[in-house]
Length: 85
Image (cartoon, rainbow, N blue to C red; front, side):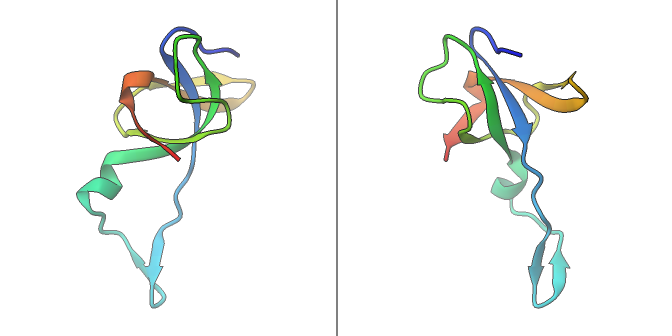
């Protein structure tokens, strides 16, 4: 599977719930709840500054799911990426 143009294929990183003193904290700040983290699987030919295996933060509502070889990946636009870790 290869992304094209300005698209990026991402494997979402599942965040563990935060624990404080043994209690699970479910309240999120606006910034924690707004973005999703993912590992880059494939990068389109027009994308600059992002490469395979980078971890990115992107808008939580961006992109759509795609199933490939029994795995669910997400396709997001380059413009929805806000941070490359």
